[in-house]
Length: 321
Ligand code: NCD
Image (cartoon, rainbow, N blue to C red):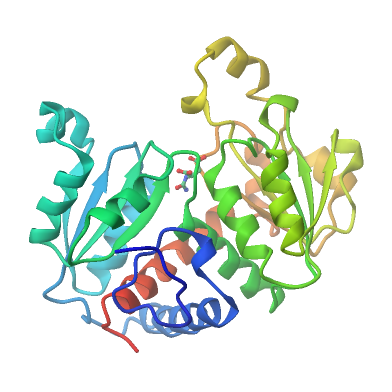
């Protein structure tokens, strides 16, 4: 199926990119998530996915996203077929194409959630599938729409709006697919200002910045921590994506160049901001920060991820209106 704009119409749609979302479709997803979260938090059993099977097809390592989808589906009574590392353990290792793998697993299931190391692979899978939708759980350095949806939901939960926010994005902005999707999401809303801080070799590309500016996002590149604005509403910190480096010496040089410490927070962060991270972290946030009430990465973001995926899968499968 081709990529299309959602316009609140989730039933049967592929979810490949934040480009598909507009404000009404995001708000529809958020209100569905609020409802599902209420039911889950009050232990009200819901089995709207009973009788459905979702294939979780993960060509790249994942614990969080895989676990989050798996828990989301099972909490709603659905089932999963779990295919991890098919390039090692399945017919893919015999040379099967992505297209054929998709056509086989669509015969077994109602939905495929796929993670793949190649940018564009999710679109390829969606083009190959005849009958069922595909959800992109990360396509190389491309996008990671469901992470961005949970990030946007977390911001909306905290600020009650997604416009006129100031955010700092730090870390691997070149390879971080969660950043790419989240920036597209923020560019849908008016008056958002984004500061970008990264090592020189991991900067967001010029064409990407130009595109975001064209959509109305105010983008400011900064070169050091000293330029962090004190009024930021959120910091979105990311891991340097080791798996995208061919030169490991280059990775070693930059891997710890940007770290959130208590001192950095004290100097530049407002008391009302939040600290976000898609996880996993590998040293770029000092664990002393975890208890700070502003740190939401291990508190709300992880939980919100499961709730947003519960809502998204239910909407795509038409089990909730
Ligand atoms: C992210 C990813 O896979 O892109 N992880 C996740 O899904 N939460 C971020 C990362 O791996 O750094």
